[in-house]
Length: 321
Image 1 (cartoon, rainbow, N blue to C red):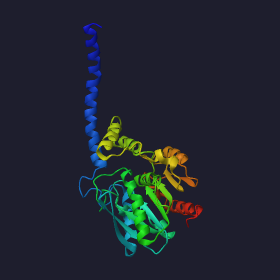
Image 2 (cartoon, one colour):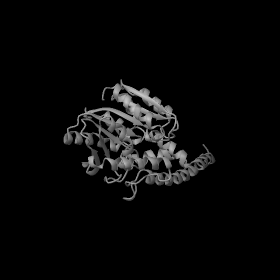
Image 3 (cartoon, one colour):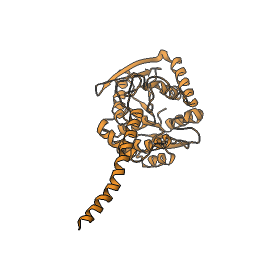
Image 4 (cartoon, rainbow, N blue to C red):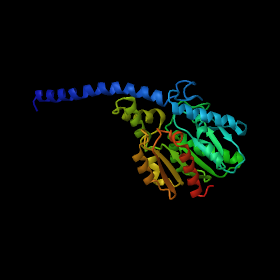
């Protein structure tokens, strides 16, 4: 090939690669900014025990109703702590004298106070209540949110702690968003506690990768290559794979009785994705219930009677109550 031919090839490559370099450099800054905002606890005040979204009326109502529930039953609460991976993790156990426990796992940016809101239907059904500050939230140690992946190691640790200390041998886990991811991943590992009898899940997604992609749309951020960069950074910085360590990847091994609640208005855990996740689950006792109203994690505030009765009917069907 003549020399000028090589020049043409080099020039063409440069015309493609140089703009790509600046695009990736620009979006890389966006990716780091989003990660620091969404996944990293940059101060003690961030993800503390406050309402995480004071501008959302429904969210404020949920938080306030939850706080009122906690105040009402404060006399039944025991402050609990465990250590896992060298981190002190904090929780509360409401001991009503029952022989069963509902373990409520909230989503990202929420403390255990948020989980109070989901406790009452279980108390009425004869369950003690366990709520926790997940890693990097509330009073627990840690500096990042592991998208339910890192936190999945804490689920059996908490169950074992309550079982040993309080003699409880029947647990129902209630997961919201990332909280349900923790259970999906934990329940498919060896030595998962046999005392866990079922999962009630709301707003469960295929993977954090997909859910994050929907968040980027709402934030009006460039989707690609940001989601690719997010996955790469999470692998290198946190040692987690937000695409492969996901509910959809383990669903064919998930055998716990499952109640999956999905909202038609959920922008992050899309209804058709919940349906395909449900279909793939290996559970022989499973139910999928769809709600017409309610944003992500806001199903109960829009249909409390249906929400609570759905839980009651499911637990009756699998003979937990």
